[in-house]
Image (cartoon, rainbow, N blue to C red; front, top):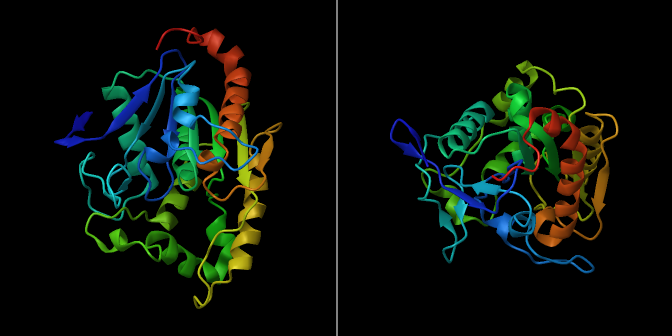
Length: 284
């Protein structure tokens, strides 16, 4: 999808029916995890994207610098135009809004966001409130994490930007997000629209963090992460926090049925507002 200034973004969509569901991947991930399924029993497939596409238009995309899992081993995507790094959440949100507009995908959208994608989804919802009908945060990164980690945050930030064991992280064009600046952008944005339907889906298994990193204790990261999952659910009264028992961080891959169910719950709760705007149940 051409978005101007000679740039293009890779967008993959399936299904018909409104509202359009937009899937936002986590740090360094392209669109592929939403189409992959490796369920942990008793969870079952299908994967999130095709599962939701049975009733709605569903789209996922590759941010510049993210991993393309269609190659073996994965490579940095060439399907979206490379960008100078680091970037900020506002730049990511602007790209997404431009992509959806250029592709002719009208809002309002249901945003389903994983990990750091949650930060982007929150900023999109707060800066484009009329374009967002609901949010599903899948083990999402909270803007409160840097402050809560305190002195341990710089080490964790560095680990997030350049994960151990990924040679792609040393290549030019690798996605790097200035999280500190992105959190500040979110703090300066308007508040979330009151009454926005939301759901939070959280893992139960710990991160496989490396030990021996100076100033960073995996147990502290885990405690803070779990604390902020509850805080994300508290953003809107009545928001359920669904625990993906037995799942690691990639809940959309390990328990796609739970993410699909959470999204359908948000769709159901968004139905009254969608009817009032005339966008509910129309072909996409």
